[in-house]
Length: 208
Image (cartoon, rainbow, N blue to C red):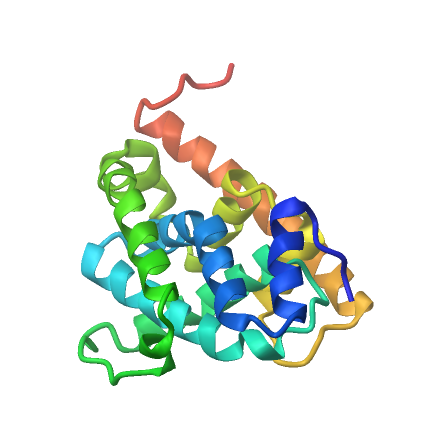
């Protein structure tokens, strides 16, 4: 069981261990909701799809939080859930009408979710117009996620491996190490591909 990484996660952990799961979920969304929504938006780009995926993530987070075992950081686990929400949204992009879930029973969490959406909206509008983001969009889904979580979010290779494996059962140390090594190779190849495309489109000068 991993100890919280900073004081903010310590407050969430204290609420969690005290059985105040709604408070813990609200604090977590307030702390990480903006960057999770930004991550989802960077992958889907279409605002309605991003909003739906973030709703799926929030519901999944609320429903499964009581079973969280703290074997990784809370932030890493939230990205793992966000990946699952992204996969679900991509499988059924037209799904718009959702049944009421337990999320609606929480008094504070919906407000935190709404704030995360609002705070991120302007950022997403800018990001979708950014030329470099358009180049990233040419990469595979996995490569895009690896770049965002490694470069933009600063996840360690082992935390990134945990997110990308996205397994229900805890991965073994050996599995995490193997996956981290694979992701490093993909990361280097993706950076090389991005550099080449940036040179071709005039975004950066060609290396001599």
